[in-house]
Image (tube, rainbow, N blue to C red):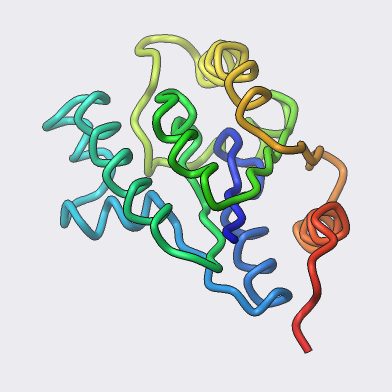
Length: 172
């Protein structure tokens, strides 16, 4: 059984995934890092060369590959839920957990991040986060087995909430 973390950028998927891996004696794999390794270039270059649809194609390939594995934690990119086939394949052998945060929290956490290109074009950063989050929220909601609010909790507290919700045995 895998654990799949979904949610917008800045909700804590990477840090919480790594903490969970240590607490549950599992391996955490970042889908975005896997895509970057596979392409041999950063996300910004992939999107510049192939557009978002090309990036999403690579993301779907990585989702299929990771879904075939067992006993891993999958730290997804925020847009993995934009293709229903990604969710369907990941869900076969996993519990999907949605890490949620408000627009304000997300903006404060990722405001200086330059690893991802704009999703909407000429909007302000806050407007973009708000617009994309509004569009994705129903997709996250429909994909997740359960959700964890992350605004007022540190990554360790979030990991503990996930473990409690899953009823998972801790390492050692």
